[in-house]
Image (cartoon, rainbow, N blue to C red):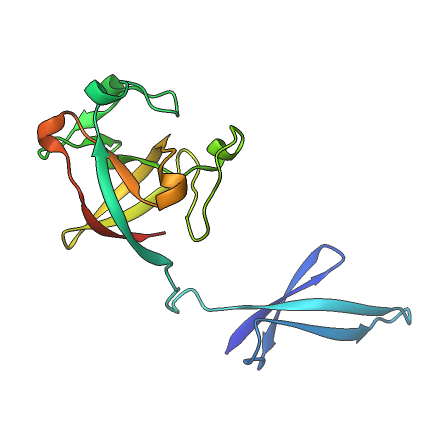
Length: 169
């Protein structure tokens, strides 16, 4: 049985429901005071149900300190990160990446249709060569605003990677 979240005047009530067709419905309730209340109902799925994960395919390229800077847009620098066995920077066990970010919109960058934007600290999963890696956005990439690609921060030119990946949000 599904449950519904009923929002009335800021009060959340859980009630059983047989509603199954739409995610949002409206019902009318006649309160004891005779006031007619229109409330929105949102279906809540059981925690055990599978949740849809947004994923998309894009190109991943790399950048390294010698060609750009030691520091990222988030204020963290190469000495704040660790380097894994592939020569890729990690932060708290997650790959460090640059993406299209909402911050770049403030500086006049244009976001092209279909490009996903992130904020510093957002975590995503990258499937690289069939292996899932957790990643954290720590930098902005201007060209990514147009292409939608993800840039992997690597320690040197020998560690660059240029490949198609699947991004899971």
